[in-house]
Every structure is written in structure tokens, then in C-alpha cells.
Length: 604
Image (tube, rainbow, N blue to C red; front, side, top):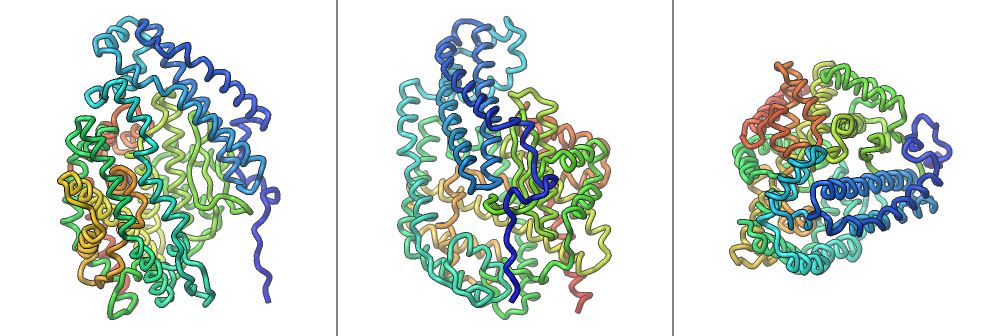
């Protein structure tokens, strides 16, 4: 009997496969010194609070103080969470992370007065400050972002009341989280090896990818039996959360909760509506893809529990980490030498924590602050999926690198609306490269399927969620009770509309709304779909070497938050207030679906 392979301890890893965090703080003592220094700086907050009315120089001093607090706090927090994530069982770094989390909360509280106090100044006063003090000019957009909310800001007393009630307003979301993550008891089910396992949200995702249909069916029915049992409670928590959004929008003089949410990044509501319209027109493409899944799985009835199992078997290609690095450089070559030099710096300068070890946080991410490298956490396995993960996270990190090298701290980050565009552009470039260079038809089919699944999950599914989210907000605003039956009936119909006649109307899927945590965010999910679509359009321009496309793209990467996201993207060459960029993605989806169908026919 073979011995079970054990994960290595952190101390056993080759140094070159771990990230180097010493450029942030050379030692834990240096971290503690920074923590102590920040604690003393926070005590100075009272010296600045209440001074914004004292003239341009006082205004500038307060801005610089507040930003310095944020900047130092971010550096401290990043070091602590990276140290903790590399081995979550390490008690020392659990403590370091706890200290950083505590100081971050204190820092936020210490400078929370700044935005409301800016709004006590008239536009005329602020403009006079800018004319008087040249050092303020760099902060004009920063201050404009604050004053843009003037019409939606209440009196100081009213704002204080709302702030004091924030914990009450978040109660429904908190209740959902506790119930969903801690209190629900799921049944014991059978996995692929015939072993009995405890079903959970995480285990459910794994079982849905099983090639054993009985495993998938049992997990699907077992999960939704539990959610159905608590459907009235989940309807109550979701309804209360929606009411909070609508209440806040109403008292702040917005026409709707959607307008209130999108206004934070100055996104026109038409962007949301355009996404829904274009996706609706192209649902027949998703129906075609679903029908192909039914054909390849060779089933007389296709169920929702059949939507995530591989339709082409195991990947016919694998990459070692060194091979993946080479492939990434080849795949990203259309981005030019300057971009590739940054990627090579990431590989050579230990930005990346590569392999899994005992206690390491699962998954993958890009993280950092203005004063650190844009670090990447991986848990490497030799697969095509992990190659795509590598270039995805590299997209985030190079975006961060360019932003911080080209923007002052105040604009040294970017909004969620833009965050997934650079990473997904990289994935699109890699897909194009692999399709052009791989000769094995089965490998090409697997790559095509990987892309099509990405569009299914990121554009179609997230737009379905966005449509449901808008429906529940508008129905509540009309006074319609959001009962479990009402939500489930609508969701079942919506799911059938998106997936088409090839999929059976499983009664369980009507309760899917009850388990989606994103419905407790505030008009968030649509950004996954718009970001993926924008990335497709940008990658296409770069691949075709359209005049100015690469220069415009690099300008986007360097822009940070120096302008509103829509305007940043217009300069990159994509007008996200129009439909063309989403329609372009649908054309790519159709072309690659055509190619996959042709390849599969050639196998038969």
C-alpha cells in the first residue's frame, strides 16, 4: 500500500519558491516598530480634525496626514496577512495579523471625520483653496470624488444616527452569513471513491465536478433539501437586506438602490441595462453550448447537477512550474518587452509564493500595497488551470505595479469595476496563443472548452445573478413582499430562460438564490461580466495590432484611480457605456463554440 504524500512544512520549501517579504519589513522587530510609530501618529488625529475651515494650508496638511495614515496602515496590514497566509497554523503570525487588524480598525476610526468635514465646506471655499495653494492641485480628483456626494449627504446629526445604526442595518447580512456558514447541517453523502463525506458548501463544489453522476445527483439533492427547509428564513434575511439598500437610496435622494450603488464609481445605469440586453439577445449561444454538453455527456436528460462535470475528461496536457513560466512569457508577448520585463522581475525577484505547504491558505491571489511589491500567492499543481491562474494573478500584479510606478499614492489603486480587466485580458491572450500553437486537436478542444466555460460562468451566470438582484430591489421598492415562494418561482423561470430547453427544470434549482452570498453585496456581480467583456475586447485589439491598442492598454494599466473608471476605459479604447464590447465577446464565444463543435465532430 502506497504511503500518503504529506505536504511539506514551511521551513522545508526551497527559498526560490517562496516570496521574499523582507523588502516590506526586514524583521518582525521592524514591523513592531512601525506598529508603534503608527499608534503614536494616530494620536495626532485630533490636531487635524476641525481644521479644514482654517484655510488652504490647513486643508492640505489634513489631506496629507489622512493619506499618510492610510498608506502606513496598508503596508502594515499587507505584511501581516501575507505572513499569516503562508502558514495559518503559525501562532506568531496569527498574533501579528491580529495586531495589524486591530490597528487598521483604529486607523479607520481615527480619520473617519475627514470626508464628512470636507462636505461642510462649500464648493466655492474649496475652489478658493485650490487657487491659493498649488500643492493641492494633485488632490483635485480625490476631493471631487468626495464632494460629488454632496447632494446625497445628510446633516451631521442624521449621518451620525445612520453611522450609529450601521450594526443594526447589517444584521440581516450577518444572520445569513452565520446561518449559511456555521449553523446549517448538511447530510452525509458518498464521494467518487465511495467514501462517506460530510457535505458542505466547499465540498459541494468539488462533488459537482465529479465524473460519477450519482455522486453529483446525491450532493445536489442533499444540499438543496437543506436550503429548501430554511427557505423562509433566507427569504426574510434577503428581503431585509434589500430593504436596507432601498431605504438608504431613498433617504439619500437617489432614484433607486442601483443608482446609489453605481454612483460610487460614477457608472451610468445604462451600463447595467446594456449588459442585460446584449446577454439576453445571445442566450441562444449559451443554449447551444448547453446542448453540446448534453451530447458529450451522452445523457437523455441534462440536469443542473451536470453543468460542472468535465465534458472532455481530464486535461490532456500538464505544465511544471518552470514550463508554465515560459508559456506565460510566450503567451503574454503581444504586451511588449516592457511588460515582459516586469513579469520576469516577478519570477526572479521572489514576488510569488509558489507551492503548497502545511497550513498555507488555499487558492490564489495578488496582494500588496503602494509601498510593497505586488505579491502573488499560488498553490501550484501541474495543470492547464494553474497555468491560467498564474497569468491571471500576474495580470493583477503587473496592473498594480504599473499603477504604483506611475501614480502618486492618492491614486495608487484601482476600483473593483476595473480590477478583473487586466487579469482576464491576460487569460484571453494566453487562450489565443495556445490555440494558435498547440497542434493536438484534443488539447485544442480542452482549451476551447476552458474558455467557453469561463464565459458561461463569468458572463452568463453573473448576468443571471445581476438580473435577479435588480428584480428583487425593484419589486421591494414597489412594495411587493419578497416571500420564499415569490423569489423561488421567479428564480426558477430565470434559470430556465438562461439555460434553455436542453436542461431539465430541476425543482431544487429554484432555491439557488438562498445560498448566494453575493446577493448580500450591493449591485456587485455585474462587474464580473462587464470586466470579462472589456478584457475580451482589449485582448482582441492587441492581438490584431490595432493602431495604438497596446499603448492605450498600457495607459490604462498606469492610470490607477486618477479618473473615473468609465473614462479610464474610454482612453483604453473600450466605451463601456455602449454595447459593442459585449457584442464582441459574444462573437468570440460563438466563433470558439463553432471551432469546438467542428473539432468534436472530427473525433467521431
